[in-house]
Image: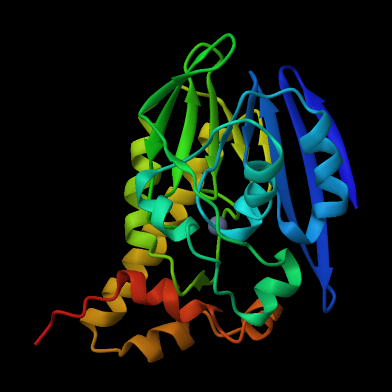
Length: 266
Ligand SMILES: [Zn+2]
C-alpha cells in the first residue's frame, strides 16, 4: 500500500509494510530535483514506477539501512543520476546487506551498489542544501537542511518521540549529541523518514531530547545506587513489545539502558 501526498514543494510517498500484525511505515521524498532515500526493495513493484516517472537529478541517502537504500541498486542500474551517501556509508553499500530475518521480511534484500561521497553542501534546482552528519542511529546518518525554506529532513533521528527500546546498532548518547547539533539550525518543519512531516518539528525533536535526558538521569541514578544494567532495564522498562520479540531482541530496552550505563566503573 502506498500513498502519495504533496506538501508545498515536497512530494511524499508513504509506504506501509505489515508482518505478523506489525505495521511499519517508511517514506521517500522528492524536493528540488532531489530524491531523498529510495524506499525498500520489498516495495519495488510500487516504487519503481515512481523512480521512473519522477523528475530528479540526484539521489541522497540519509543512511545505508535497507529501508532507505533498498532500491538504490535499481536506480544505479536504470537511471542516469548520482547517488550520494555520507563517506562512512560508502563501504557499507558496496557489499550486499547482511540482514536478520525480520528485516528481510519487512524491507527486503539490499544488493551492493556504489554510491558517491556526499559533499557538505549541494545545489538543488532552486536551493542550496547543507548536510549535517548526525550519527547515533547509524554511523553514516545525515540530516538535509534547507535554510531558505527552514526545512530539516531528519532521516531516522526522530522516528519515535519516546522510544522504550533501541536497536543493537544504535547509541542514544550519540543520538542526543546529534539532535542537539541539528537543533542549532534554524528550522520549523521537520521531515521524518518514518513518521512523516511535522510543522512544529523543532518542538517535537526538543521533546525527544528531553525524554532521552530523563531516561539518562534515571539510568545514572539507579547505577549510582548499585543496580546492574539488567536490573535497571527491568525497573525502567518492565514490558516487552512485539517488535522486541519479532526482531529476536535486535530491538530491545536493554540497548537504551546500555547507551547510558557507565561501563568504566571499577
Ligand atoms: Zn535506519
